Image (tube, rainbow, N blue to C red; front, side):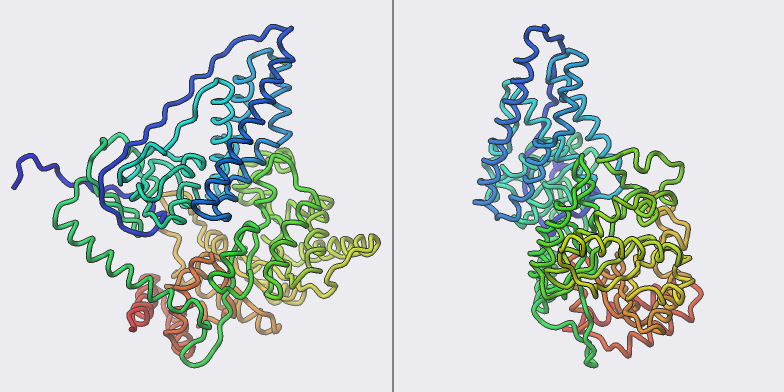
Length: 587
């Protein structure tokens, strides 16, 4: 044995981009900007504002150049990442507050801009939603670029990576990610970040394995260290042994074979072995995800989250802005249906455009959120309803309300919807008068009175994330109790069955759009309990479809019957696991 050999170290992170890579580390350490602070002479203040305006122009030009580069090297879809950056540069709230701060304080424009930008970055960083939290990275990236221009400094770049290496950084900004040479980058590892960070989006596009959330990896390794990156399970191995290299070689071969099996059904119908067709739809947040819906052959959209429009800007979106976004999705997928969920903010999602609308709450997850907030602000709500109605003239739209707890809320929402229709008629603007209206079932009270709600809507869509959280009184974000969040719990299974039965008794379609729908492990149980449709992240469709095509619905019904008879969640989980393993192993 080599006495100088370094011992193997295994580090657990978050799997972000699939694949396995082995190579030497390229440690990319970005230094923090030092921002001078001084008072600007009164007679030079006009010139200081002009300097700020010029810096914004130069930064816009830089980002446009990056967009062209990304379009050329990757695709137009990846280049859309930088639309959000241009929006930050054109945000009048951010720019206006910077100028007002400068006029009030007299401090140099770099200091004022950085102070205001950091406030916005902090606000977005505190949002619990992973995707929206990553929007802080957009503002941070743009802020750094503007400050580099103001200070006359060159921005950091990853273009210096010339050898084949694994990039290791604390975090990678969108513009830094855009400069990565796919021929030189074997993998990407970051201390911070999430599955939705821009570095991850670029990594997936390049088919580069990536692991994020590795804590202090940048402090534990040095340039040239040998690393094994497991983008499937989120594992990083420093100085892997020969045995580990051999084991991962076999894993990589098996994973690729399994993935090709899943993708082999992408263009085939989601039909069980006993001839039952299952509707599979997609969950999306932005218009540019229409391409993914088509790529993975989804039967339309089962959940379009409209919060992105409200949370990605410091200004509330107008009716026209909302209409344009909804129309793009609806027209782009017509004649397939698009289910649009009305605004679901509050809780972990404050409104940057109007922070006082909801305000601080002691228990925001049970506070003024979703439909409650909308009903308290009828003009804001009707603006969205009119935009959705107008989009319904361009394809098949279904509308659904989140966080419904009783029939009174549905009645009040119906009144406002009728008012919105009357206003559009008065304007002479077209809409689908027969647009179907449904409700999400994600609060235990709604599950219990499903029969009453069914009389007042056209369909049910179960949000399993919140439903399970509220049923079991589990805060999924609390690491000390997150393990108690269990879809196999008898209360969860019985509640799902009750919702399906109450919907079907009223001849309503019952779908699931929560995380359970995209987890192939639980799909047979959901179908066996009577769920009609499943809606999920587009990339999860092949694995769900593969399992559906490998099972009989009659067997799934027997599985559900057996699960309903269990009292121990562990035994239920074992039943579901055995069902899943038997069918996913079928050649």
